[in-house]
Length: 183
Image (cartoon, rainbow, N blue to C red):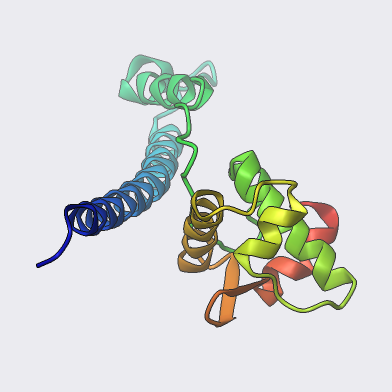
């Protein structure tokens, strides 16, 4: 018969996996939402530009764009784009794409990328999460190591890191090539 502590540990592990899965799903949805919002803004701007071009010009040389819905659409886009961005969750990791700056990541993720970039510059191999914890001056205890592992796995899933061997993390070549300028 299994022990009570063993059963509790099993349930804790299951709950932790569920939380991690839900966090990753929320991060994916947040990244998709940001892309969709940018796309919407681009289409709204395009519509307003087409409206400006198609607006008839009167005898005085002034167009009537200000009198139709184009001006209000343009103002709406400007207000939306000038609004402060929503607060990012600590674990939000967008999918990596060319030109995406490291600054979109929280400080914890940037630290992981930086330590791996330093190793790449020194032509050293991949790092394990235990080695990362030690490099960050953390206590190398399971809770800290697992927190780092969760972050590293999220970076792998989003294309920032590679895990060519289980538990050993390196920067993806394209990310490493832009690490010198920090973008």
